[in-house]
Image 1 (cartoon, rainbow, N blue to C red):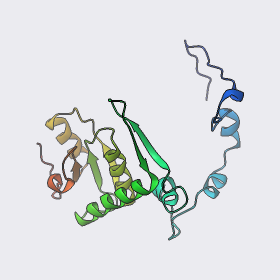
Image 2 (cartoon, one colour):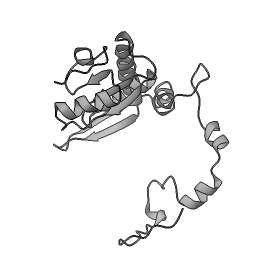
Image 3 (cartoon, rainbow, N blue to C red):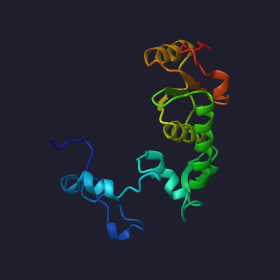
Image 4 (cartoon, one colour):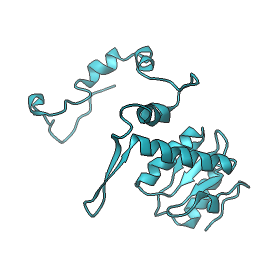
Length: 179
């Protein structure tokens, strides 16, 4: 990997003035010392012995002393701050995964979403991954034809549009609705 050049000057920060130090102080040293065995040992693993990204990022915290800590924080356009705890995110993503299962969404099925950057998006992502399905975000400004084309190209079976139930817009036949 070669060094990148930039027209912008490097920003130097005084670490002694920071309340919380950065996670990675020296990328090259961290990259050189990286080991997959060390990374794996830092993970808890699911109770059944497997490995699941959502379990590591959400559920293990929701089951412990961090359950009421903020997992996500959103600053809305109005300036209002909305927080979602690990416990809340675990519960909402479990509900979403259960809905997917009740619709027959299987492991490996592609679940598309037009949900914007809201707490519901993260619920859908986590729930889809918990279900073993593939989450495929779509840009919410796409019109019906671009959405239809992407669903067809990727053999998508389910679409979760903003503000609507996934059950109303699922496409179990594999032929997505163009509207």
